[in-house]
Image 1: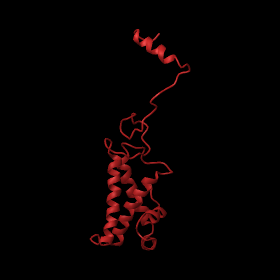
Image 2 (image 1 turned 60 degrees about the vertical axis):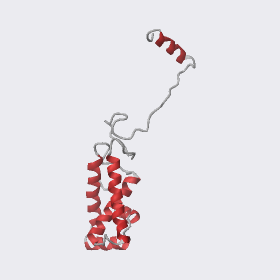
Image 3 (image 1 turned 90 degrees about the vertical axis):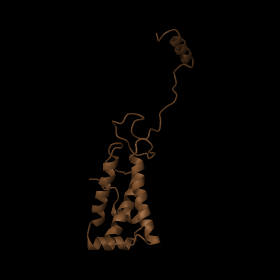
Image 4 (image 1 turned 135 degrees about the vertical axis):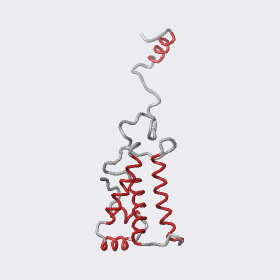
Length: 157
């Protein structure tokens, strides 16, 4: 199973103070890793049709950040917080933003998130296609004129 956000990532990117995470880990050893594994699996399940999920290390930074936000929210639920307070509303907003990002990443039509694609995806098909070469070069600068003349006469020789 994937583990996109480690304990250190959650401490670095999440809004929960490190002391609170350490206290949760003291009371329930491995809780951050277990939650992160489950959240990573949910992210994989949503992204697997379009992207090369589960991703290989090094994981995309944006993915680690978003999973860290969702894990932090679950840690707050485990610890307890007041979602109606203005300060704690930011915690829920960051979690909601992480899941909204996931929805955008999984959206094959309007999604603009760029992650490593699946190999079997056709060009321009499922994931964001950043394009390819729009021109080519020949060994001779006059080849294009010869090819154009041949096409006008009915094909290549």
